[in-house]
Image (cartoon, rainbow, N blue to C red; front, side):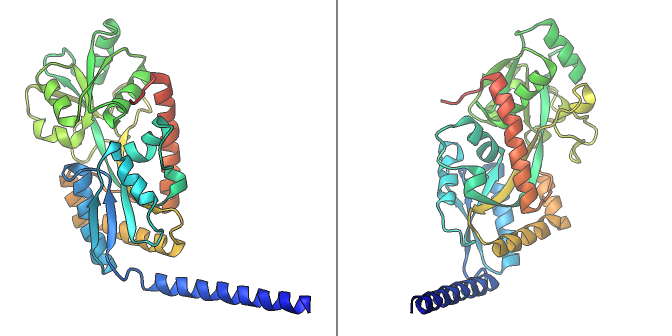
Length: 328
């Protein structure tokens, strides 16, 4: 009798599991059946928001349902990321991520309410941007080697601007200092624009800033562009050398973007979204559009994005520990 009851219970469990799997499969086959939300953990305006809207429109066309951008700004991206992490893992909430909120925050903040690799499922990388190493015009340097020579002759005398503590521009210069042994004083600003403005005004000597912000100033006599931060020269400025080829072998910093979903999202939906994202980024017109925004399109598999973020975290953990960077 007991054996019969156990057999009957096992049959019920098996049937329920099979029914659940079949129902899940049917739901995934029809995905999506209503609009998808793309959380942008930043305020409207700026490069991240612009990219989110371009990708949302293109993905919506391929998915057959609108992809609506939902700006959730605040706390350096933490509010938006937390909202995304707590969303249902059904493929109807995605989030656009970038280096600061996906790789740097988890290293800097012990009380972070989300874990990038635990609470999110990567969909794929969606492009990136080079930084430019620039100096004020009256600094007597014309190359990276000149800058290193001047900084070594005047330790602690030169200053560098950044868009703020722990931003990509800050971390890039700290990595540069670590690899060259230079002593240059940090002057943090509240954003990229005021930092670049003070370099243009001659108030600060040097900075790393996004190449897109520099493009309008390439012919400005108040600014000198020494190099770009990526491993290879940018298609936007092929005549400008990389930092690596200018005397700092192995130096590379790329600001990057990608899409993620809440952890637990089904593999079938992840694969579908990745296929559509790769197709969007492979379109020639899309690549040209992103290039006009100062971005270089590239894509990846979900696993490649996970590996990329893991390695990015490890690199910035080392830089942050060596430089003593902290956030209040």
